[in-house]
Image 1 (cartoon, rainbow, N blue to C red):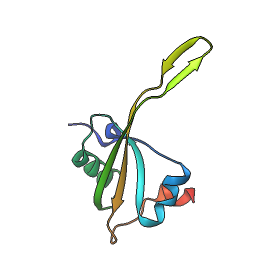
Image 2: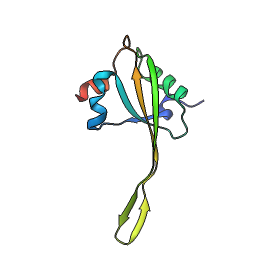
Image 3: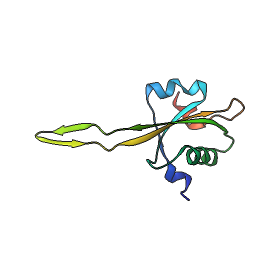
Length: 98
């Protein structure tokens, strides 16, 4: 069993993800092998007082990067969009970002 810190890697701070905070949708970068059940349990344990309604996951593929003549790829990663219930407490980290 993985620790919640190994599943939720970091928050995704973009203009689009910050627009969803009012609807209680939070975006996180997660481990590539994590499933929706593990993500739900990790969010509820890392942020006490939260109750997850649903989780949507997206696998983002790496992109081609070029450095002079050398071509390479950035690493692929997985992101999770977590929706909290109406009665749930908000995540304070994202509230300070607004």
